[in-house]
Image (cartoon, rainbow, N blue to C red; front, side, top):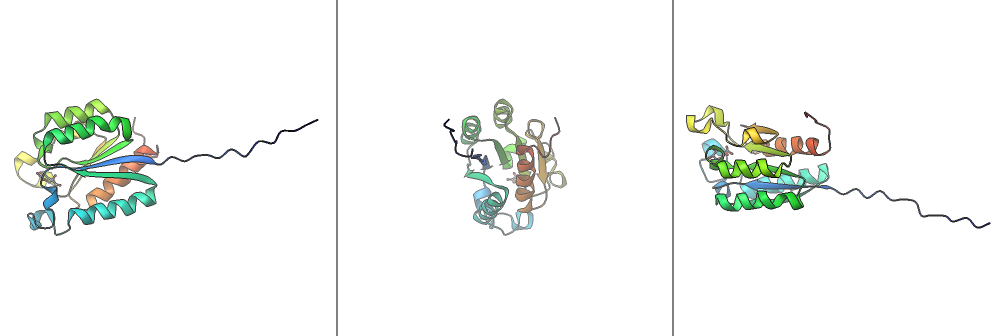
Length: 164
Ligand code: DQA
């Protein structure tokens, strides 16, 4: 009688893919309004996020756009490629129905972040059109807002934080 021995099954662990989107003027971080946004450059924030992503076993794609339409397109295409979105919509937070609708349409887990505490600033920044269509918001911790946001998104993606 012959016995067939099959190779042990390997579990392939595919890491979750996260799209990080930075909105308008964030390329100027480090020199822009340092009393509000601090002196840390966007490149440094991105490096920190990449290091953190490795620890969280996430694969990260990072983009910065100044134009609303580019952000809308990136969000629209994210559905095919990504498992979640970390977004600082910057000034579009307070104005963009188009970005809001795109996030609502793709229905990916998403976290909104802001360096500054938008609720402590001018009244026009107190409204976020984005918050109602994302899973949560982190606001006011400087560059740390991004890492807190990424941790929260990772928990959502691995099912460790289920609200619904
Ligand atoms: C910001 C807050 C927005 O009100 C502002 O327009 C920005 C940056 C923040 O990260 O604190 O550009 O999103």
